[in-house]
Amino acid sequence: MTWSDRGAISLEGLGLQVVESVEEADFILAHGTEALGLSSGAALLMNLDELEKILDQCDAKKIPMVVANPDFVTVEAWALRVMPGALAATYEKLGGEVKWMGKPDKIIYKSAMEMAAVDASDCIAVGYSLHHDIKGANAVGIASAFITVGVHATELGLSKFGEAVDDNSVYARALKNNAYPTYVLPSFTW
Image (cartoon, rainbow, N blue to C red):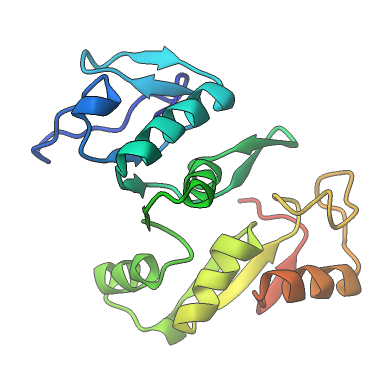
């Protein structure tokens, strides 16, 4: 399951072959929510309902899913866009097996620290999702900066870029997500 406008991810060197039917599939790779990847390298446009029908077929065959980006939503021009994590959550509700690869899993943060040869005390995670970015940082003891203009902006009552948020609103969202930022910033620009 892939993107139409962002394109497919490269599977080169992984020894994997894209197949076009559930009957041929060994597992599902979900990294997008707009299309079904074809063996030709092209993508067949599909809406979420059509992709969920394929998930029903996969669940009946007990095909496991690997979700390459577990975010549920992202922000694009102040609108929320459904991400692969939403497909994975739907698949789990159907009874499907899902391997989550990405935030908030500790391995992503630990790998980044190893690559940079730094300890958690030398890091800060910056993100706009309490559930993914901040919760993951909490799990490995990294300081975090929560950017309020992101996926929680509407929940926080924000209507414009850089607007300050009420501390009580952030605290309520943090409690709901069991994710506690070290710092709270209205925006992040460079």
